[in-house]
Length: 107
Image (cartoon, rainbow, N blue to C red; front, top):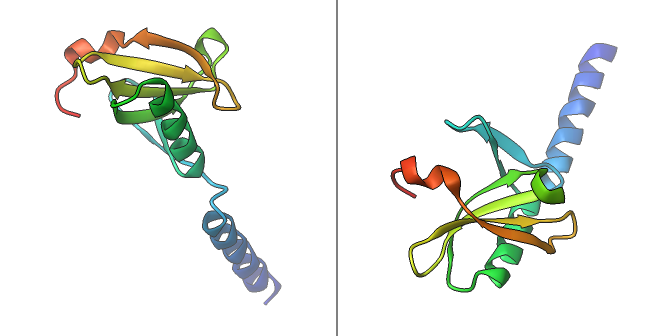
C-alpha cells in the first residue's frame, strides 16, 4: 500500500509541475540537437522576435555557443534563416546565419 501511495504522490507531483509550466520537453531531430518546447521556449521565441521583427520562428534549442543559453532559429522577411542566440535572461548574445539551413526542406 505504501508503494502505491508513493507512486500516486509522484504522479500528482508531475502533473502539478506540468500544470505550473515548469517543465520543458525535448525531442530529438535529425541534427542531434534537442528542440525545446514549453513556457521557457515560448519566452525565448518572443525575445528572439523582438530582435528580428517580422521573422517566422521554427525551433528553440538549448545552446552554449558564444555564451548563449537559447538558440531560436527564425526566417527573416527577406528569406534569410538565422539563429538568434540569447542568454539565460533572454537578452541577445548574437544573430548568426544558420549554417544548417541549406540542407533543410520545409519549416
